[in-house]
Image (cartoon, rainbow, N blue to C red; front, side, top):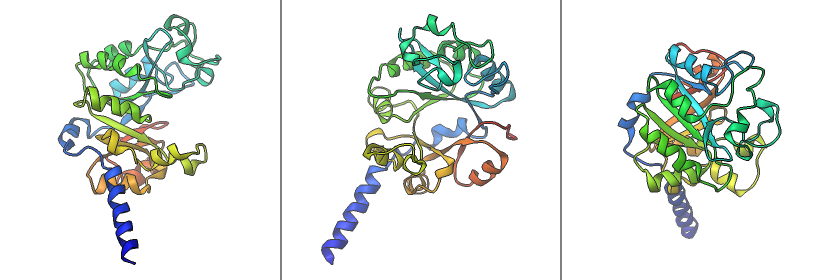
Length: 271
């Protein structure tokens, strides 16, 4: 009996150590609070301001919303703002972003608009520090060349920003090379959604790699807010909790007591 109790206590301690985020950065979040964050800009994919386009970002700035956006590398190593790894949904073309040069990508339109895939540099110039940015780094596997490319640009940027990624290797890179940058672990109810399977998704869903990445915040799919690890990070460790993606006023009302920052889409919340 005692052996079982000792083993259970040891397992509990190891679990709490595994999910432990970085502590003591609460004051760094004060400038990010008090506003909502427009998912891929203030966009409507049926208009001239589709997702992750310059008009969508400019609309968000004008309305006073923060911005969440996605960044990945082209074949010629230029950081561009685009969500999907593949081009089919948004541009109606085959292949991946990383398989095309920037000039080749400029031939494609975003949905039915005349807008093109923007460079990260263009977006930073358009926002110009007027609202905070949540920059998601899209790294599909283990090639981390996006990290230094984006970091060089953001270090010259005068505005407020933080980075986030689903890929824990991105956070580990920032921890090693630029530990001062606020970083967040993106996660989801991977196993519950049925879309993903395997041991790695057990680790990611339950934030069991926080010991390695030491995130300053956890950004979680609000539909799976009951994840024990997520709740412990917020309640026990006082880690900032970011909700993605809120799509209605009713969803926002349900999430408001469970998260600290909110990324929204498909409606315009009242500031």
